[in-house]
Length: 521
Image 1: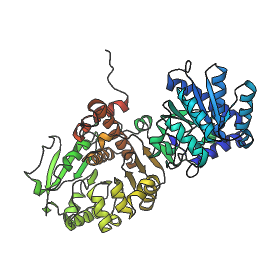
Image 2: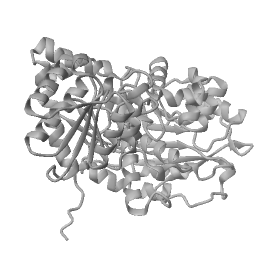
Image 3: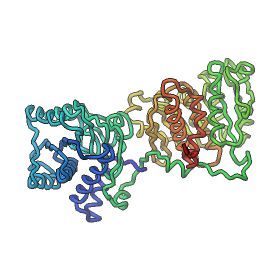
Image 4: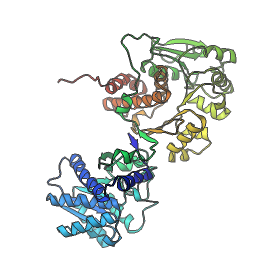
């Protein structure tokens, strides 16, 4: 699913109006009607409910005026408040305001504290409050009377619905003004906007619904969209094909190099992800200091071998790296490694000799940032940093990464010609060509040590199947999120574990492949 920036959405609207010839009033009418239909679904019907709608002077306000008219025409109680006189409204909004007045629904102009008190009273007796004040037109913090209006709307006990985007939310970045309308539901017009799916905007948007306003596909395509939301339909279409006549060699081989004395279980967790990916062969390479010292049992399907170690972790020279590079398949390096100079040299040699795809995770990323090792990579890479690791890789502050996950991930992927999986509550995947994909499925139950190891093993296994590296990253992230959601639903976020999440990966695959068991009870 494409995600639009503010400018891309405006460009698509302009194209529809100026190039295709659809009048703006028609698009506004469609927006109001489709919003009303969506409201009916959200609220379980409109009859017997009271509405308060607050409208700004732009086209977002015009959408609200159309909604008000159709509610009024269907004998649904509605009160309308406007933040500017009709003379200051956009042409389409003013036209719809004049229609309201002619049919007997007089909007109340909010210009003083007394007017805002009147708004508070109206909301007190409403089941639903609809925000149509700013839409995608907000710039900077909301101030003055408008700020008081937004704060009053946030105080209501009624259901809070935003049309297009909540007032104060940047549709491009997800940043929030002070104040910002805190919606329980957002009905976004024509196409979803990026800011509704990344933090902090996601929290203010609530549950997002997309209303089709009959924006022509040619208009939507007039902008060179570079942002996409991961959906089940997208991921289902890129999963590796499986043939009943295939053998283990067709399934792909995964080589995992993980673990140390300090983190002996990291490789085992990564192997869970690789085994659940559908890979035909999973080989786990451990430092020989762990021989007989593993904290838990390796699953019997995993081929375990030991490599030389020093000071509690891997110690690989050029000859050994060359031997490892003779393996086929996809390599995972980094989980549980530690950050000594010996490990840095091991990673340097591996990157120089391994010419197939490698997934670089955890301590390998820290070693890259400490020792500038990225230039040594002979083969294609997928890197899987969390926010802190990305800060070290880029030399930027953690807050800078949080504020611009999309831009920073894209720049790094483009500059270094690799795939970036920037992990957070909302995960961003960037590819060298500049396209960015967003997995917006936050889950507090996944905020546990070992989650990254499981995800890295899953991505590595999918990549070993032969699908493109970008597809492996996208599918791995989405399957991981799907399994986490199933685990949370079954076990609860408080007590679910990473190992249990791995056990729900088969259910995630079945759901995406469309062959869930039918419940006939």
